[in-house]
Length: 178
Image (cartoon, rainbow, N blue to C red; front, side, top):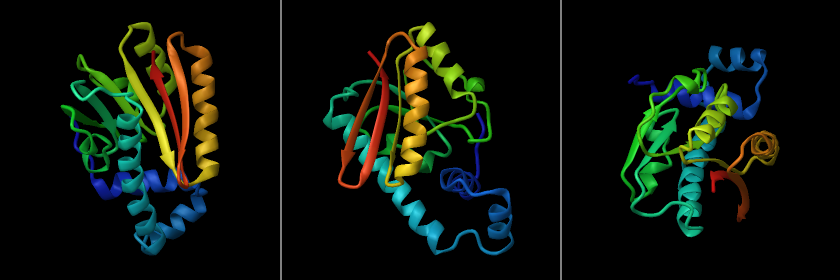
């Protein structure tokens, strides 16, 4: 199992969610990328994780006795820390192939998008491994981008459903096995 640096992984996630072009990323890296905008984004991201967990519990998408394997960029950026379940966090950088993750015999929980994610979920669906993936964000443009990816994925999978919700100004989209 790999251990990833929190700041490095969160910066990658920040750049990805903001859709910064390469020149903007380089400009930020030459200065201080941990500026006020980043700090606000990080705080909101951690709050989104909490809202996502509350949504899963409120809608009874996850039972309290379900054992979960969460795939996250870092255990400190985990939805599972807000769940009372037995959660194993498996770190996976957003620059890594999610298909290389070693799976345990548990419900798979993924928040966000990873490279080759659709093939990963096809494999889970084919092998009848239960999973939940989703997004919770205030950034409507990013939300729509992910929602479109989820809709494409739903069309390719046999046994999944899409749930969309809004909690104040946070947009939530969840794909789960039936």
